[in-house]
Image 1 (cartoon, one colour):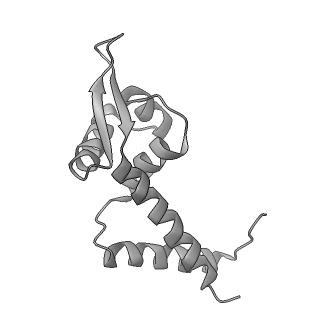
Image 2 (image 1 turned 120 degrees about the vertical axis):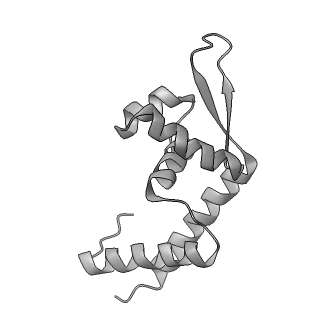
Image 3 (image 1 turned 60 degrees about the horizontal axis):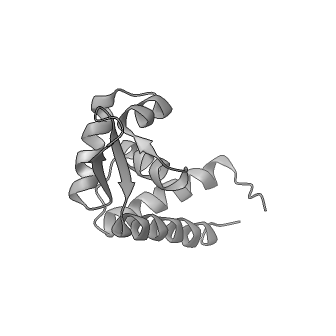
Length: 115
């Protein structure tokens, strides 16, 4: 089912979701959230090189985002045994729960939007 929002409703939803994340103690940047959601919403495998290409940023940008996400146990990294130059990004239980909570937050905030 498609949902149609006016521009101001979209901005209100974006604001409310970000505010909820701040209240929940979430300090992820938009870039970090984009990396996290790409890892969890798109089929693996994910590599630093592949994420950089997909998000049109440098590998260094992805590495910095993954450093933060890794410290929060939202993702993990391991060397690809078949090609040691590649780093494979893996999902974690904590990351899956965080993404699910984010989806729940978006859904609940969308229901609160004035019609």
